[in-house]
Image 1 (cartoon, helix red, strand yellow):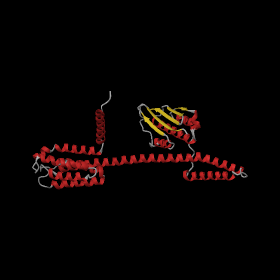
Image 2 (image 1 turned 45 degrees about the vertical axis):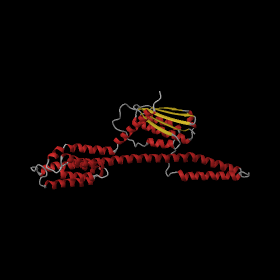
Image 3 (image 1 turned 90 degrees about the vertical axis):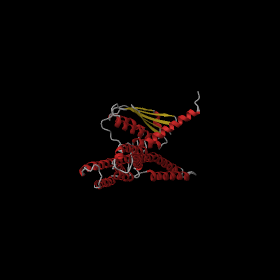
Image 4 (image 1 turned 60 degrees about the vertical axis):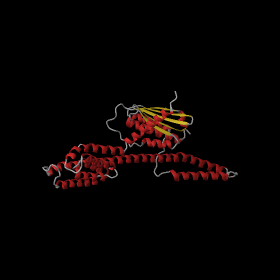
Length: 382
């Protein structure tokens, strides 16, 4: 039975509305609105007292003033001093101490320690000045010590919580930047490794080409092709020099092993406590050196991850070729109980693997379920 267009449009509109609500409820703006409403709810508890107190505001007018004051919290991230000044006005006018707590927290959270200390000092100073004004605070029997026991803790506690949140934000931002930097370094190192492998593998072929062309040039000196072979030898030498200038980095390193190094890698992983079941298509040995190096790096990183997060579990490694595509699949079961101590990890291994695979025109996906972790990489086989 065909679905009516109106029903489909209604479902789409409902889905779009849900997505919009979900995105909005998780936004800072929604948190600011919730903060303002919470402050208004707490201040509403003081409305009966404000109505009965000797001031120039009636109950409904006092409610409107308090609502306007709470609305200043909507800009507490960009202009935290606005709700602070509004709160000081309400303290002197209506003896209302609720908004100042939110304002001091906002200054500490979004402007840091110095601003919070300055704001708290101003709040306490204003309270001391108002204490000397006849008729404030009520009742007059209140002493200076009782006033300070209320005013000082309110300001200090709100500011301290805001400063702690500000420092936590800085720590989270620093952690995120360090993680991003670690991933960038890993990607750059992998690019350098790929470049060096290009030099090792392509350079070897260019060297053979140079030597072979020079031999042919010597053999053909008395023929009409002598000049052509000399030019071929010169071209090969120049290509090798250009490769050195562009790719070679300072420092020596061994070339990344090929698939012939996988059995030794599997044995090493088994000795470390993560046995490996290696299933490799014999046609993989015919791959180019660059692709063999990519296979080795993907398997190496996956075995390292398994040793960190699934020690003792068997790792299944499957490397197959299907026409023009090469498929590498590595999976391992996850332990039922998480380790008591988190393993040391920079979190950049997957980015490093992906960079190696992407440099050859392939794709890499990592899938984690409740019981298994699987990495699948595909790339052209030629």
